[in-house]
Image (tube, rainbow, N blue to C red; front, side, top):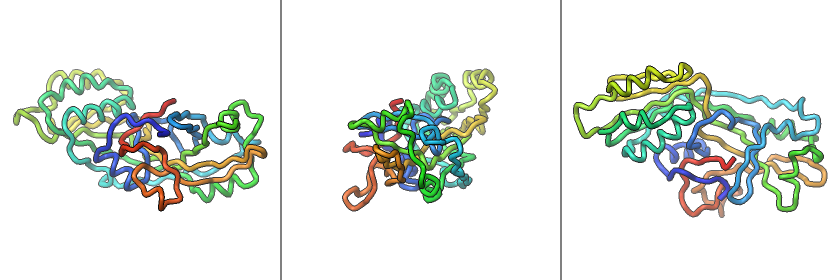
Length: 271
């Protein structure tokens, strides 16, 4: 496989893959953005930075990154998951906000099922046809110190992130508890929230939901296209969309991100 899968298939990952043909990240982050190059080889992946820095005279390379707001109802609430599985998802989400999951997990003792919601969700993307037009007549700089990873005989594939789904906010919804009187606004949780970095706002509602809101959009899913490079001239062409696992690869002209026999869930970058 080409990207390592750290968390198995679940309702959230299935929805993202089926609806957006996007790869869900276990840890939301800011560095996964449109027009970022990713090197892929076998089970390894490596972020390589912005495409324009690999082009001849690339500083004038300009492709519009468009945006559209996704309806909150689209990712309003996942189906419920049990506590152990929910805490694994939560750990990744909180890491994206630079928060420790331990105090939240300790405060959720007694919860048996939870769900998650994304709000203030945006799609940032490039028009692949515009990208192709802008690349026409442009070549990769074959003397660039960073290009060798792609040009050597056993080099990496060059992928380009074309589309991301990002959010500033996610919510833990407490669905079921062992104790009917359980209330998430217990003193330990309140004390932790009071000490949270001011860059992240934490809000509790009715003791049944906890919402975390940051000041930056964090990418939690992305889509890639292949870039085909002529190793003699550096000419670049936009290739196939890198699809998610589960499609009919024999009937499809697309490239799959992984060749794992298992249905993938949330992923981590190798680097």
